[in-house]
Image 1 (tube, rainbow, N blue to C red):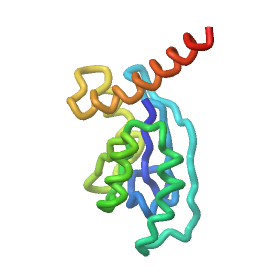
Image 2: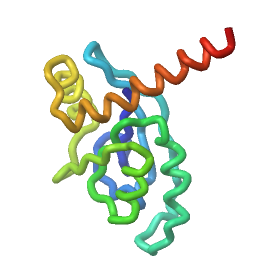
Image 3: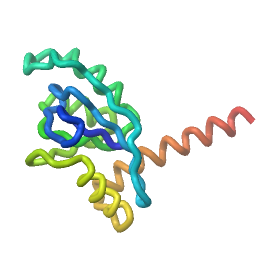
Length: 137
C-alpha cells in the first residue's frame, strides 16, 4: 500500500498538511518498504486560508491509503477522507523510517480495523485493474 508523509525536512513527519513543503510517498508491505516519490511544493506555503493549494497535494497522494501529518485542518481532513485516504496525526515530529518500520510490523501481524479498511483501498484498485484486463480480452 502507498503511504504519504507530510514533511519539511524529508526525514521526519513534521509538517501541517497544508503547509508541507514535501509529501514523501513510500510503498509499504509486510515484507518491507521502498521510496516511491517526493512531491515538492515550494516555500510559499503559509497559513492563509487558501484552499487552492490543497488540490495539487490531494492529486499527488490520490493513490495513497494513508497520509501521516503533524496537523491537518478540518476542511483539508474532510477532502483527504473524501479521497478515501486515512489521515494519521503524529503528536510530535517522528522519523519517517521509524514509522515505516512500525507500519511494516503491523502489516505482518493483525492490523487494527482502521488499517484494514485503508488496505481495502489498495485491494480494490488491484481488482479494478484485473477487471479492466478481462474486459479487453
